[in-house]
Image (cartoon, rainbow, N blue to C red; front, side, top):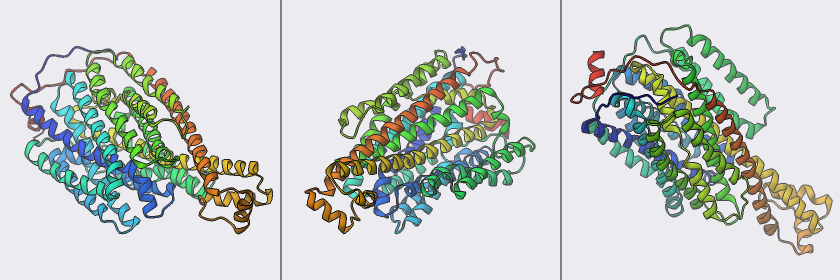
Length: 539
């Protein structure tokens, strides 16, 4: 789309104070979400759960947030955005403290569910306020700030998490997040003004149930594949359930006045393309980040602090890129800018597909920054807001938020499951090959595979005697195999992510160069905030 000139309208100091308070709440939520990435391998070890089931830490959070985004967006439009935001901050703080004292894995998952509820009351509201506070010509910059604050939150969260966990253990991340959420509650209470949209009709309860089924089934597929296999009746049944629920949601949503998901917005070509691009980009990014988390933590001599540094460098670069790209989106052709921006992460993942278990950490961190600098979320938000009616900013931004929270767990859980499978296969193959080359009897290869599956915890007496007679220690075989397994896993997953970015580039090319001009958006006078103007017109 060509950049369009808009009248110069000054944003007041009062509006900027409101916006900074709002992005602080988003910062807190993102920081808490980023804490999870380096922590998952440690938490799974602490509670003795397999890596693919550790994905429940992510799934439990995102299933709730993804389901509730459209609901909280509508509640915010109807009852007040500030009210819903305060409720969300309170729930989030309490559930973070609860997670910190989790006695069991199940208790932690329940706490994560409530964290998802809290975050669902935060993100769509902050995005909606961008449309409320800023005129169209300033939304690119505002979206860039929002994106950069998220990136800074992710950078600090991931970077600090690795070091804090090494010193204090995994519960510390929840204590810190709970404390910050408490501060955020009072910041919102004192500095943000109330704002409402327009909502008619009753809440779509049937649509809400369908949305929950879709979220639970779609987001569980990767974990089910890892646990039972793709051909399992559980996996197949879940896939069928997801497809049927999506079809019913579309059919049903087109036939009622106030669906839980605004299907009418999805019928706009540009918005639908942006939603699809956002979904794929988020999934690809999370797939890479969580894969790298396990790669850096599990490779020989690796540790969780390196995983945190990877997230920190990636998010730090995204913070810089978000500001630059957000500013440029107000001045240059957005379609061309999207293409140029996505070339950066595509190049980065192609380079990552060439690394191995012993690649220098500094080189990997430089690629993390190169990947992060190509953060184009600001452009996507601007495109989306241009195609959402102002009175439905809450519902529309809720839909955009749900896309992100479908993409994030899809990518992260798929990354965890695929890394586990690629790693296990290559690790076992490496140990078997080493054992064969060392002269271990072919009849003991089943014992070798069993020992590989348990990382040496279970070694048969016959295999132990054979290794001793050959002067071999299984630990030496395992160390080499761990390097081979992690190398194979990260190279395959990097190429997978590269494929996602190729698809994204194709979708960007389908965005129309120009859109028909819309009726001018009513902008508040200098002395009156836009949020107050909307409140006046809706009362």
